Each structure stands twice: as structure tokens, then as C-alpha cells.
Image (cartoon, rainbow, N blue to C red; front, side):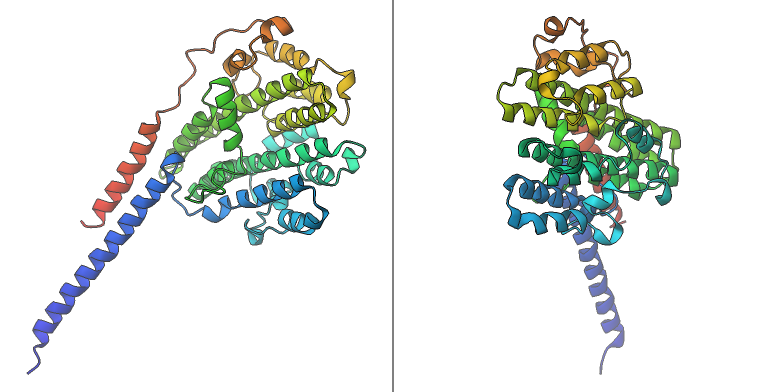
Length: 391
């Protein structure tokens, strides 16, 4: 005779075991995700891996531009306009990011307008396409200048889109948009070693920190983590706005450093190819934060440093001209001072070369949280989640 009672108990026991195994797998997956992201410093709550893949397209576009091979032209333009790895269906191709109408998509556009006041409308897409083709506003300029301008402006495009997502996160109290801000700032953040950290502003910030002994990339990460806490229910909009402002302040620091680094390289260059390279690199990196800088300072740098309006030979000391203007501007943007840039670490003789006075960075400036603190928070959160699965 079939023992239905015993069978039911056995089935229930089996189901409980299967459910426990399933929960264990979920927990291990989450803990593994935290470990994968340990070098990143931020763990998105939402899955934004597809958003971050725009960085693969950026790197490939940069490669096609660098190759200078006309047979790559179709791949270059299709990657830029239609996307290969980026999310074409959501308007998140690289060109879609460059032409985004913030207000029409529900994001406040004061920052976008600040960029346009200095650089003009459609300043991202038109600059990139003209530079790729070396025509339009880049007609008559060298292939080197055009190539560098196009490749570096792709970073500016990603930064702009991360700012758009930040504004939308605040407007909608949206954790998802905040995670997308991270994705477009960082680029690929999983285990893909070939493309890890490509495309956004984070990679540039890390390089400038190495140049100048600063921690602006860590400051941006701290702002991201602070914002992630603030956007979780109950949402603290004031703290979220403060985190976004801190994120932007970190970009002011990094791209002011980049502007000065390459202005100095331009000053020292003797070969025309180097002059063209550093002219384009310094000016384009300035553009990445032009709308975040003090408006008068940004307009001054635009007038001094745009290679399409000023020839290198006629403006050999743009380096000191910008340094003096920065030194005379107490707040170069979002509360950052020239003294916070630690310029003398890389530009050793800037004070004597340019006849300016610099002070040590203010000790009152907030320091980024330690890496162990950030990762400890992530690990603790994931561990707690794993334990709760079995309660």
C-alpha cells in the first residue's frame, strides 16, 4: 500500500532542501558580485552592466579613429551612431548620449545649459563628428589634432551622460538612475579585463590622481556611495543633491589638472605633431568640465585654448595665462580652488614660471573614505542579505 503521508513528508523535505540550495546559490551569487566589484568601490543595486558596455563601443571607436584606416569607416560610424555593445534601443548609443535632450527626458538641464553657454549647442556630437572627419570646424587641421580631439571628446560625452543620470536620479528619487550614473562614469565594471574601466570619466580621474598625488577618483566614488545611501527609502533629497555636487566637484579637480598638464606640455613642445597633440588633448579635457567651472574662468579658457580659434604659434604661453586666471579665481567651480589641485607635484616650477602663489591644499577638505570602509559596507550588506535568506 502506498504511504501518502510518508511521501508528502519526503516531498516537503525535498522541496525545503531545494529551496535552501536555491537561496544559497542566490546568496553566493550576490557575494561573488561584491567580490567582482571589489576593485570598483561601488556595487549597483540594479543591474546596469548593459549600460556600462557603452565603454566597449567607446574603446572600439577610439581604436578605429587611431587606426586611420578608411576601411574601418563604416564600423566607426555604425558603432558611434547605432551602437554595437551600447543600448541602442534605449537611445544610449554614444551619439544618442551626445545629443540627449535632458529636459525632454525629465531631467533638469541647468548643467547642460552651462556647458552650452561656453561651448555652444550640440557641442558634443558636432565636435566629435567634425574631428572624426577633420572637416567642418576642424577643416585644415592636422590628422593628429583631429584624432586626439575626437577620441578625448568621447570621455566628455560619457561624463555628460552620467550628469544627466544624476539630475534624473534627483528629480525622480530614482536609485536606478543613480546606478546608471555610476555605469556611465565608470564603464565596464565586471570581470571583463579587456574593457574594464574604459570609456567614462573614472579612468581619466585615476590617471590625473597619479600625476598630481590627489584622490579625486576616490572622492567621486565616495560621492556615489553617499548618494546611493541617500536615494534609498526614505529618500534624503538634500543629501542626494550634496552627493551629486561632490561628484561634480571631483570632476572640476581632475579636469582642471588635465587642462594645466597639457597646457604645460603644449608650452614645452617643439615638434608640430606634439604641439597638435597637446593642444587638442588639453583643450578637449577642459571641455569635459567646462560647464562645471566658474563661468568667467571657463569663458577665458575657451577663448585662450580652443585650437580652432587660436594657433599654437601665436599663443605660446596659454599655460601661464590659464594658471594666472585660475589663481585669481577663488572658486574655480563647486568649491574647488587652484590650491586643491596640488599642481606643484607635477608642474614643479609653476609658481616661478607663471609668477603665481600657491598654498598647500586645505586640510579642512573632506577626505575620501578608506577603501576598506567602502568595501566593508558592501560585504556587510551582502552578508546580512545572505543570512536573511535562511531566516
